[in-house]
Length: 502
Image 1 (cartoon, rainbow, N blue to C red):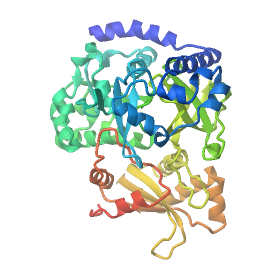
Image 2: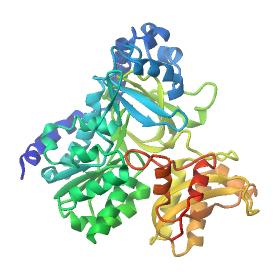
Image 3: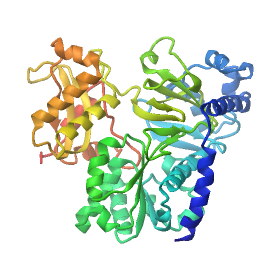
Image 4: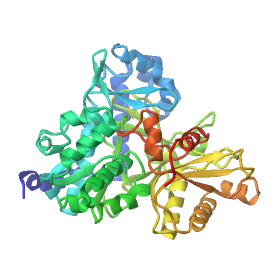
């Protein structure tokens, strides 16, 4: 037993006990952070504009502060990026996390000196919960790989700026740096394909204990390793025990990743965002991720069926219900206020508060009023793969086809890249459609009313999604393919690629 694993177990026990709080204590902590964040920011430019000094409670807060999306708060962000102080939060941000926006171009999310530690603690405590519940800490004595963005940061008027994962790289605890891979120089590579090749070279002969990253990009890494070594990942890395994932729903990628590994490894799911570390898997036996209620963030929850109305319903933690889809709002100790991060979540437990991520509030299909969401299509894929167990999917996305060129009725088009296609495509397609009709009554009504025909599958060539993301300059790192689009931009981009079918 190494020194890291030796000390990890008692420390993990202490950390896990800190998280054992009652629902009423969780709600108290939430209102503490609302009050604390308001008090600290009341003299900022934003605080004066929205009368934060007049707010006494959450009801006052909802009256004074509206829901903000990035475009709404962008004028304040631009002031902060220009180097001005006391805009959204006292002083200057410690960092800007740079993310890719679909309509806004690059987004700059402020991170403060107060909020930065919670990004690190969230990741650390996810691992410690695993250590405590599994009794396994030996992976900490092996090499650890984090597939992340470049830690080389640019400066925006004196504020270091880059991908969140690159920023976090600067805060990896010193006791883990000696066994962290890839090297700093490799991590700084901007070209994903060159970086991936270098990571493969650096890690091929290492004793890997933990691998962390967004599933589609980890899959690319696994594919390269397998192609060069001729071995399954679990054979190549016999000490590989733990896979840490976040950023997207893991389930659609699980089967193919496990097939690449070739044996069982433990999986830890996390929910990090540039705006804050939101949740992590605290138990291997329970559904959902533990909401971090004491991490500098006050959460609000907007039922998705009211989000786009003139007066959206806003709820605090004490008002949520099981099984309802909510748009997630965050008020943070970095100066974001009732900020919609674009995700939708659903509570699967209220004691403790655990959530699952169900999709994106603006990633849906409602070309005919059906309002199909990511949770529905991902469950449909799971059920279709159970009906056709030989099926392995690399990636997929869904779009409406309102005016098909072949004279067919309108339908939903599922663009799917298979690693192993179903032997009975008709059964696979019928299972998908049956699942969608069972889950979404509006979709079912459109099918039975002959407004839509059942969904159709368009099989894509190998590496179609990789080539598309590369063409958009979004290959690798933290970029994700939207599950759903209400238009044809992504679909036509994929179908227009010059590729040959496998």
